[in-house]
Amino acid sequence: MISFSLGKENYRMIIDYHIHLERGPFSEEWFKKFWEKAKENGIEEIGISEHGHRFEEFKPIYKDLPRASSWCDSNLEEYITFLSNLRKKYPIKIGVEMDYLPDKEDEIKRLLLKYNIFDYVIGSIHWLNHGFGFDIDPNDPKWEKESESIFLDYFERLELAIKSELFDIIGHIDLVKLWGHKLPKNIIEIYKNLAKIIKDRNISIEINTSGLRRPVNEIYPSPTFLEILAPFNIPLTFGSDAHNPEDVGNKVREFYKVVKNLGFERISIFSRRVPYYMNL
Image (spheres, rainbow, N blue to C red):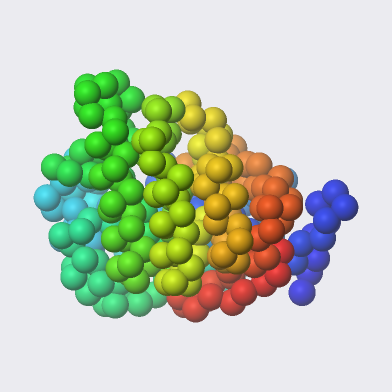
C-alpha cells in the first residue's frame, strides 16, 4: 500500500469521498478540474457522491419536497456509466449522498437495493419538519423564532438515520450548526448519546471540512463532538463536500493529523458498500 507523507506523519491512504459534479456536465473535461485539485492537495483516492435528489430514479423519495423534486432531472445510469468509464483511468469510488426522511425509509431502502451499484452511501439530513430546508436560507425567520427546536429536530432525525442502517457513512454529522446559531444547552448529552449509538451500529463518520467555508467556521463534527467520539474507535472517512473544483481536498490532510492526535485509529475504504478498515 502506498504511504503518503504529511509532515512527520505517514498515512496509508488520503481520501476525499464527498465531491459533487452537479454544477457541470458528466464530462471528463469537467471532472479533470476536480481531479487536478485533488492531486494538488495530496488526495490519492476520490469519491464522487452526487445528491440523490439529482436523479429522476430517486424522485419517489423527494416528491413531497417541491423544491427538491424539481431537481431530480439527471439519469442515474448515465452517472454510473460515466464514472465507471472514468475509473479505468482515475482512482474513483462511486457514491451517492442520500437524504434521510423518516417517512421515506421503505422507499430509500427499496431504491438502494434496486440500484445496488454504489461503493458507499452517505446519509445526510437537509430537511426537517414540514419540509424545512434549514441549510438553504440563513435569513429564514424560522431561525430567529425556533432555533432551539430546529437543533433538537435535527438531532432526533440524526439518531433515527443512524439507527435505520440505510447508510454506510453519516455525512457532515452536525450540519445544522452551519449558520453559527447558539447550540442547545444539552448539546454535550446529545453528543454522548449519539456516540454510543454510532459505536453500536458500527457506521463510519465523515470528517467534513466544508464547515470551514460556512459562517460557523469549523469542521463537522465540531472539535467538541470529535473529542467525545474519539474514545469509541469509530471509523472515519474524509470529505471536502466540494461543489466547485477549487474546494476539493480543502484542509483534508491537515485533519488527518488532528483526528489521529485525538486518538482516532481507523479510516474506512469502501468497495460495493463493504468497508475495509485501514489504520490512520
